[in-house]
Amino acid sequence: MTYRLDPAMFKRTFSFEEYLEYVKELVSKGLSSGPVQSEKNTHLTKLNFQRLKRVFRTLQLTDKIIEITKNVQSEMFWVIIIESWCGDGSQNLPFMEAISRLTDKIRFQIILRDENLEIMDQFLTNGTRSIPKLICFDPNTYDVAGTWGPRPAGAIDLVKTLIKDPEVTKEMRGEAVQRWYLENKGEQLQSEMYSLIEEWDAELMGRKLTEVH
Figure 1: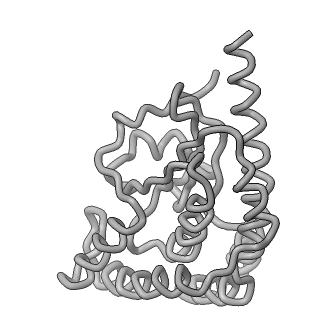
Figure 2: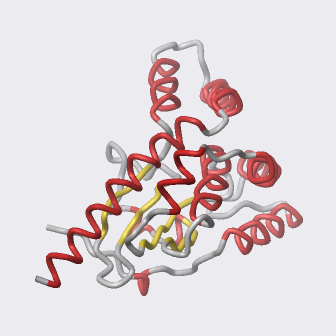
């Protein structure tokens, strides 16, 4: 059964610029998004605010991702689920925004996980509410075409390896993943998004042709 994602379910949505302003305000108040306020979450929110701005300012899109995105034929609605303390989100969100800006076929919005658990729980990763999670759906029928997240495959493999080492703490894993992002410079994410955009475009076009006939 095709899952249908109704935008009316969203508690609150942000454009990329609105999200930056929201996180900036959280930082100024010493807060984080979500119901759990802790020193750790507020510290991560502050770090991520700087990362969001830096990554968006310095990222470089590949020729391949530019070409395929500019040639998208189907209208797509992308929604990314995130929280301000999410380190993976701060690295991947800017690329999603930059890619979506390449075409008027893609509409892109951001929602917060803990405000939208009804939606989040439809897109669990191994039974967990892992973020960021990108959902692509048809803006006319609201049928979901596919998802991405919470990390590029290389970062996922790194975490799996580090988890097996009892001497590596959660904080150490987080630092290692951030180093991976710095070294990879969004290359693997863009490679994965290239394949997904091609797949989603074909699927949405196929559905449209089916409806016509």
